[in-house]
Image 1 (cartoon, helix red, strand yellow):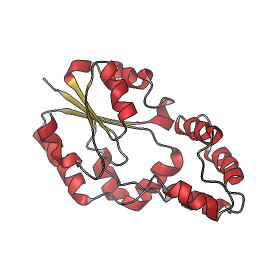
Image 2 (tube, rainbow, N blue to C red; image 1 turned 180 degrees about the vertical axis):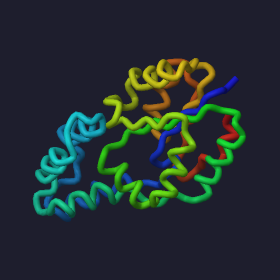
Image 3 (cartoon, helix red, strand yellow; image 1 turned 135 degrees about the vertical axis):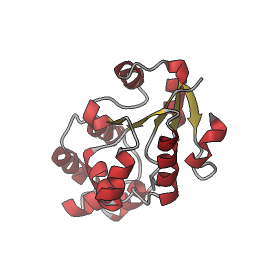
Image 4 (cartoon, rainbow, N blue to C red; image 1 turned 45 degrees about the horizontal axis):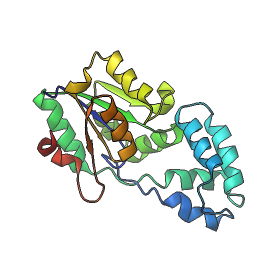
Length: 201
């Protein structure tokens, strides 16, 4: 029996354009290949191992013709809209009081600041208040799909894996959770929507 639900954020609630980073690189003097160095840089930033200033400084090597504000705009450009119907769905789920709800997102300081700005304080707080705990990778120093991050959430909230349901759009992340006995939905972006949750439980 499912008692707990853990939600990802990007492409589950807020829509993303993950390709914008690559689209913009060439325009500012870089190459569109995702280098191991860039991937490592992103991972470091997502777990809070480096500051936003250090991250932007390193990205300036990737976008040699871009100014600091342009780099920030490119980085935040992947964040699109957060449809109101999804927020309403989540609030209705809270009101049913059937499940304990948690958010678990690989994100970084620049992105979460931009999300709060785009949504506005009222809507952002409505969203945050839907969850018992709001776990962001850069704040807890862990990122998906490591087993450590799932165990962190389970242990800190006395959750049983078999009673927990996890939703993420990245198969690597749901596969890792499945290995721990957590039930999962690997949501297919563009084909499925979080509002179909009840049919998946």
